[in-house]
Length: 457
Image 1 (cartoon, rainbow, N blue to C red):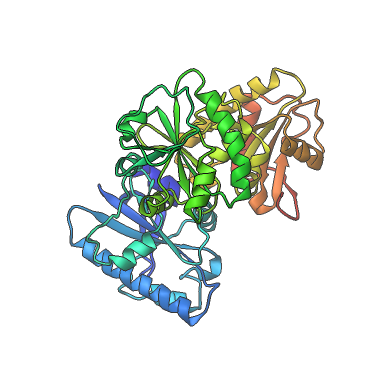
Image 2: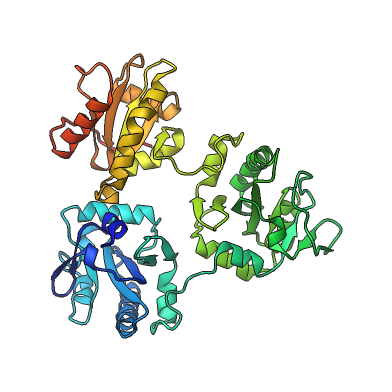
C-alpha cells in the first residue's frame, strides 16, 4: 500500500497500450521511482515530434533495463497537459506513439483524471511543452526535475535515479565566500580563512558556519526585483539573527560577470558560492528547480525544503515573527494567495469585525483541515483552507460576493471551474457543525453555486 502516491495520482491507473487497469496502491515496490511525463499536442512540428519519439524510445529502453534489476523499480505515468493530447482520445501522432505494444507506460484513469493532471502540472511548475520529472514512489518527493535530460544521456540507467547531492554536500564540496558586509552578530567563528582580496574571505569549512536553518538566495545584480528584495531580506535576516544565529544565507549568483557579482555581493551580510564555481551554482539551480529570480529557498538542518517561496514569506513577515515559515494547514488569506485561489479548491472563513473571530475561525478549520489531509482523498481535490480578515484580496472578494463585513461567512471557491458557493444566509453564525454540513453538501453536490466569467487576477 502506498497512500502518498494514491493521494497524488488517484486510486486507479491504466496501461496506455492495452488499457488494462491496475490500482495505484499495487504499483510500487520498495525503492520505486515514478517518472511523470508531461506531454501536449500543441507543438505539431516535425522537430518536436522527433524529440518526443527519441524521449519515448529512451524511456522504453530505460524501463526494460531497470526491469531486469532487483534493486530498483521504475514506472512511467503519462500526464497529458490538455485533453486532446491524451493517448486514449487523441487522433494525433501522440496516440500512435504511446499506444504501441512495446510502450509500458501508464495513465491516470479515474473520473478525476483531468483535474489531477492539471494539479500535477501546477504542483511541479511544468512550463515546457514536454517535461519529464522523477519522483520517489514512497514519499512523492522530487528526485530530479531535469529527468528528460538525464534519460536521454543515460538510457540504460547506469546512474539511475540520478539523485543530486544534498545541499550540504554541495556546499561542503568547495569554497564559500564571506562578504565584507558580514554581520558582527555571527556566533560561529570561521576557521581556515584566507584573503582573496582586500574585502572577501574564503571559508573552506561549511561546518563552521552551520545554523539550524539555511537559505539559498538565487539572484543577480542585473535583476531589478532582486535589488529591491535584497533590502527587505537583509532587514529580515538581521532581525531573525538578532539574539542568536539561526539562519545562514548563501548567495547563488546568476550574474553575467565577476564585476557584477562583486558589486552585488559586497552589500550582503552572508556567504556566496564563488562566481567562478559555475558547476556548483548550476547544480543548485537545477536541484531546486529555480526558473525565475529572485528566489529564496529555505531548508532545515537535514536539507529538507521548508519553503521555496521565501521571498513571499519575507515580504509578508519582515520582522521574522513567524520564521522559519513552515507551511500552515490553515493560512490567513493574503494578496500572495491569488494564484492558489485561481488554481485550487479553497474553503474560506470570512471573519466578522471582532477581534476574537480570527481565533475562532482557526479553531474550527484546523481540525477539519487536518482530518482531510490524513484522508485518502486525492491531493488535487483537497481544499486549501483560509481565514480572510483584512487583506486587499479578502476585501476584494467581500465586495465581489457582496458579503457584509460585520458578520462571518463560509465560502467555497472553485475558480478553476468558474464558480463559488456561500453558506446559506439563514445560518447566522459559522460553527464546526455548520462547516462540516457545508462540506458534506459540497461533496454530495447539493450546494447551489454562483458562476463567474473569469479567474481572479
